[in-house]
Amino acid sequence: MIKYFKRHGVLLTFLGVLFLISIVIGIILFLKSSNESKKYISDYLINLKENIFNNRVNNIFKHLVIIIFIVLLSFTIMGYFSGIIYLFYEGISFGFTIASLVANYALKGFIFGIIYNIIFKLVFIIVYIIILLKLFDLVKLIVNYFLFKRSYLIKNKLKRVLLSILFLIVIIFINDIIIYFLTNFLLKLIINVL
Image 1: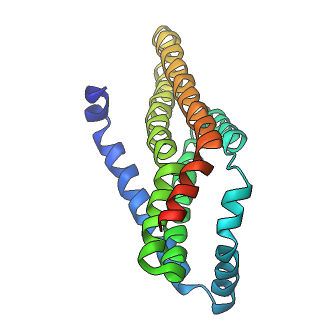
Image 2 (image 1 turned 135 degrees about the horizontal axis):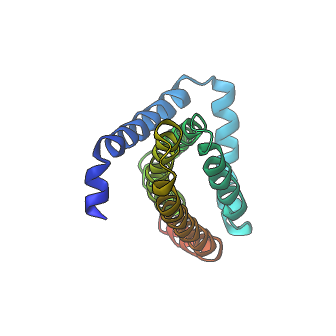
């Protein structure tokens, strides 16, 4: 696996930097938002404790649909970029969430925002970036097939790439099930401590 990451070092660095830039953009978007928007967010955050205690977070369907959609789009080669755009969106969401919590709850909001994003997004983002690397392999296979007509190469490699993507989707599915059943309990503990 380490060799795989080294072989994709430039793309991995690009995706990591893009994610960090999008987090900064999310923070800037919150800071530049109107006072009316900030008040609306502040009102929502007042009810955050009740929302966490009474509702479960269910990302199972959302994550499955997004990943399957992006995998299918990657077969069109240009559709691969939709996966990168979604990573950018997740980073903006990450930054916006932390900035809004900090604006309303200062240090406690920052701590809660980091813990919240680690619980809900860390595994997904890491696995999603690995899926993007695998989809890049898929795009390379398709390009090689159309440019060089190497059908003997595409059959075995395509099966391996798709199986590894399926395995990664299963990891995200398991993570989302764990989040669904355990995070309310964890977040209740965190909120009570903060």
